[in-house]
Image (cartoon, rainbow, N blue to C red; front, side, top):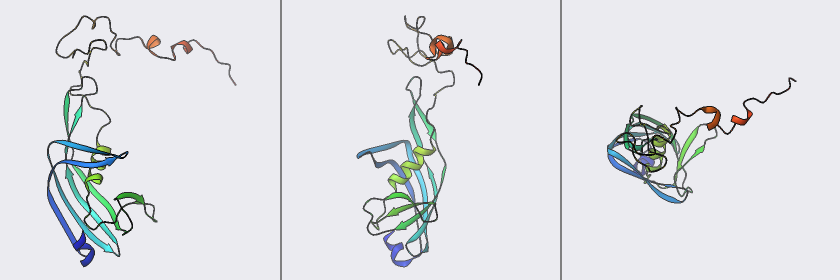
Length: 183
């Protein structure tokens, strides 16, 4: 970005990253991928201290099955587009709202590290939960046995959510017969 700031032109970068390091809640986090994530980015000057970042990012996230915790690969093909603004007083790059109402990535160091931005995009575009198989049976709630591989002595006694009657499994079951006056 430093050469781009001097020339007010265009620049680009392509390659791959095995992981991204970023800060969250004051702690350094690492987002690892199943294989190195490809990226192809370009930044174009749009006047003054503003630039347009565009390109693609193709990570394969390593997630855990929501029921049995097996690793699940989740490939993504992300199209990127973000307004960048150079502001010398900014210590760490962060997303803020521009005067126009759109999001802008503010940065103060000409050697801009996009790790946090790419990690945020990948995480935000990823699913909240995944299953390694739609028919995943999960783990035994008592002993932790993976019920996809074997049964345990508890499996017959522990109700699986779809087998459990909703009237007794819901905290609102006591309200089922409640009659309310019409207003």
